[in-house]
Amino acid sequence: MGKISFISGMGLIGLSGLLFTIERFIAVFQYASESFPVKLNGSGSYPGEPSMPGIFDNFFVGFLFILGIVLLVYGAKKLLTNKN
Image 1 (tube, rainbow, N blue to C red):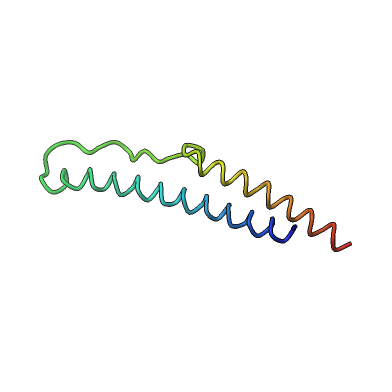
Image 2: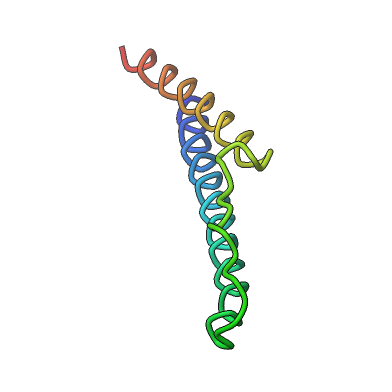
């Protein structure tokens, strides 16, 4: 059970990191798509800085990250106690 918890914890942390990276990529893509017509026409104003999402802005990123940490610690504890 410890090995499964450890591996699933690492997977959930990786999944939350992937979701967070995709959110940041979408934010930058949206900023670029809003500023491109201004650069093309040469008139208007640039939108402000891109609004980057925080790590706990999306519920699933925070939830998967915390659940992954819990499973990682639980699995590591089980693996270390079974080896003794």
